[in-house]
Image 1 (cartoon, helix red, strand yellow):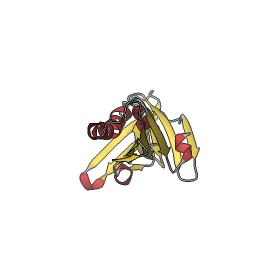
Image 2 (image 1 turned 60 degrees about the vertical axis):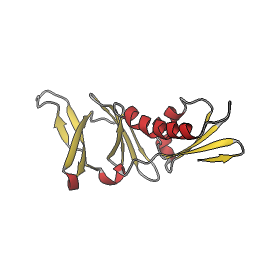
Image 3 (image 1 turned 135 degrees about the vertical axis):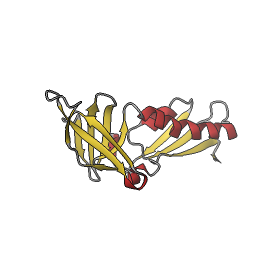
Length: 162
């Protein structure tokens, strides 16, 4: 923690804690929901980590809500009956609407509370925060719950933020 001209600087680094390295999404496969022959065909989003024996499949509606090709990656958003919106980058699961708030609350509030426990800003003083990554905006929205926070948000891919 450092002081700069009476303003406090808080560095919040939003990394996916290596998740993008360990979760490789397999290509989508068609599936039916519950085996009912009249059920709508669903796409599967599969996460696998062979080293630890982890595999997870999410069923999503086959028609994407949005598909964008940026300079860096393919950005897809699908709808899931159970998880809400599902966000993929290059077919790798990044977050779901249902679990994203819990994950991102920890990324924002734990460092902020630690910082505030050590260094209290002056009355009306500004807390400057830098969020690196996190184009989905969840960490930024959590930090905005604190008074007098000014946030710089940087992401490699502007299309993720858009």
